[in-house]
Length: 144
Image (cartoon, rainbow, N blue to C red; front, side):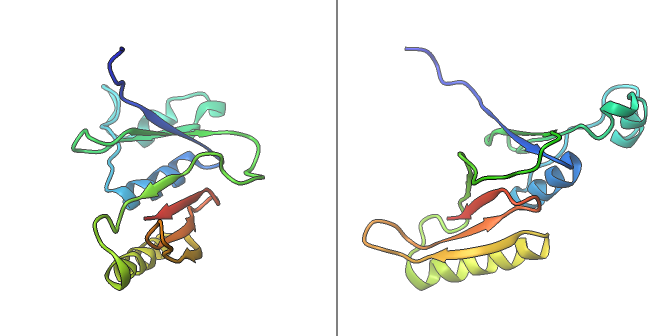
């Protein structure tokens, strides 16, 4: 049996820096320092040919536990439901009204960052409540 590998989650988007900074705020992730020889990422970006500028953004969990996130510019817009989405685990271990209150508070914080609240999926006999949301380019994710 092979060992478990680290993963990277890749987002196709129109504005990688904007979407990447949104997810940094959501998850507490950070961008790495700019490449050697550059004071800022903007300096590095200006050194690229025009067609490559602002074409990607990367960030990671500062604790090293979560996956690296990579955002790449693509020409086409989002047209259908995501086949894969992130669950932001804001209510882990909580149930009922206490869980929903924590999810609602986190939802309000994310809406202030530009996210869109889609709907609440109420608790049933198998699952606790969660809130379906969209990031700033319409990618679905759940507050769970």
